[in-house]
Image (cartoon, rainbow, N blue to C red; front, side, top):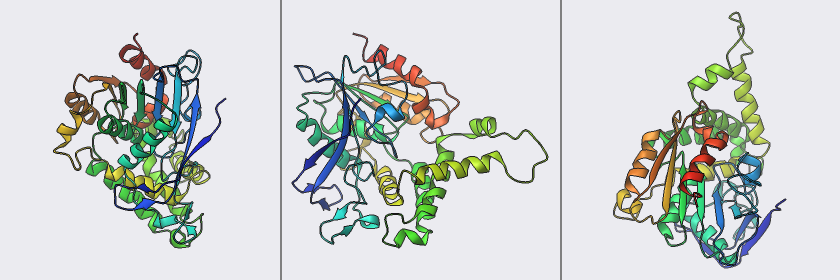
Length: 340
């Protein structure tokens, strides 16, 4: 079983937004062994509130005989900057003030995640990545890495995501931040600040991760006589409570702003020109009921990356289907990446 490891980058780490981190710590986990050519690597880019332990949050993907087989491949998943699972984030101490960063944590972007994990790739002596795979925000990172370091990535699997954060995405994120900022404890200078707001924000987010069909199926009432105590209410409360037991409001805000910043066309001639820079053999996977990243956004990515293929997964689970439809995703990858 893999254990959490740390890479400490002792030099200042410059951020795209103009600020810097005096030191950078990256938490990561690995499975399997690196081969002599240092190229049998599967690199997993995790989503919003996930962590480096991909085997725990992506069931059916890591293990003997599964898509990510540690007997064949060296599997790496690293926690991102701004999170709260070991990599430098808002609960760490700001060396300038001697206090926790909290709501003062600097803006981070997807490109910052790539630069940080590129340092880790070099530290691990990985020559090239056979497959980089990610869903949602994880796919943001996989795509940017394939643009910024095209020679390092041989195959990319891009799931339930887009080349840029749409106004629809950003509106969802801002509504969630408004809930957090309305909680006065967010500014209380304590690591537990903003928990009530975070609970509400998670309830909002969950609606975008699912869809009407799945709510109407799973939260339907057996009785027509109820005047309260609805299943849907309990479910939203439960999901919000579950997140605040493992996450913090400051990391949530940092990640939502990172989400908003995603646009592969920034600083380049255009989004199309950026996509054309990808050299990796690319597999694009859409979820047919995804309301956060509708399938046409993945079709756009597939159309504009040279020689990319486009596939659709049928699911009742909406955006969260990328975490739950492991068999369909694995089958697509076996035919597009691991056919040899």
